[in-house]
Image 1 (cartoon, rainbow, N blue to C red):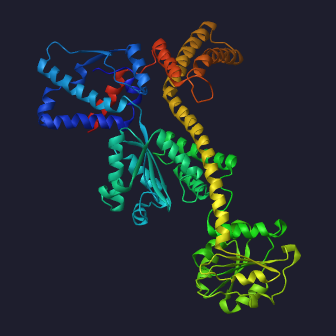
Image 2 (image 1 turned 60 degrees about the vertical axis):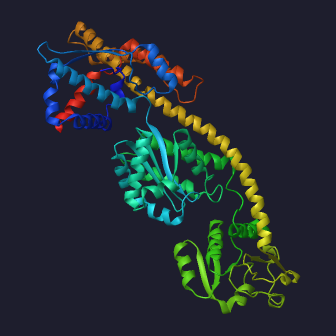
Length: 561
């Protein structure tokens, strides 16, 4: 077998072994019946495989190409010896089978597994499709398990919100992984694959990382910089904890995305400033009121439709937890009250509107009335607003047609602001957020590099573990020799002192090599230098896993079937 000695390290997982076995079995069926093939195979006990390490130059070439996690090297020498009484035809069949197995594995080992996102969002797919694809939070663990059960998927996570349905996976093969996930999405939603392909987007590795960081920072949201998506990304991590399949790469990606979302909001303040009419209405009202009166100002909302509900939500979010809502029926108000249990929402019928207005400091109007609800003659006799609230009764009219006549501005103690006034606030805030989004992109680019460096550093983890194990074996053996020479009646204190001495020496000797095997973005060393150090240590201490280990696992899998 032309397989490098580093090959078995990454293929130790059951998923890869299954892939190899499947590839082998498929070739068997194409060349003849399984029984005739077994007749030509050589028994494992009749085979001895000797592997020499791959030449360094070949490794270096693969490293420069980026395929460093595991590689199949043509320069690796393998000798297959068979007993002299074995039929050459059987050896030929074995050789062909081993070549097939090697070529099947070669597909997945020249480059490391890829991070892939298969998604549909408000930008690419209609709500009808997103509804069918949506996965409730309670079903995320099940979905992760099913996705990781696919042949080419190692890890998975689901981000399902009202605006997006995105599946993040670590795939052994990009093409096959995307195909399997898309078919799974089609099966669970009932939407044809062709229709999903028409609306989906695909991103790989660095692009997938950058996308999730942008999502977490609110740069991919309809409202730039909105904060709800960060909470939803946090929930993915919370639900994924302890779920098999929410592995180190995906977990690390989402945790880093949370840090990015927090950093972007802290350093750019991108979430500041209203960018919708309803939020701008609340922001404008609070700007006009003295800051000390925000929590005590008497708020009146007329209309409990979509816009009125949003105004109420924004008021509650700003700390105004007590208000009166005037509406034709109490049903909608009761629904809002049920949703916002922390707020005190008092319902009043429409015929009490003027009485409520007389007791309010700020009045928001958002009804579908064709005629104005308030004119100058309705307002002039209302009692004055206290000086602690600015001395002016504020009318914030977000209705079209307008609910408050412009003539109200003629009343000495009243001020009216309509949609056009609010649009100026929204436009200014949107422009400010776009500037902040450009600052956020610089942060995301920096954080993406750090995440890639962290992921690259995982390549050296097996070598670090093997080097420590190698040193520990030598330490333990030499310690036993030393203690045996010192006799059996050595005091426990002396034994402990000698043991501590041996551990201290080993730790100090390993400190330098370990430092040069770590590449987490905190030092100036490049990844290529770190990987060169890894290969050098593998050669010097013969740390690479033997192919025989993989052979034994493959045979065990075969015998189980």
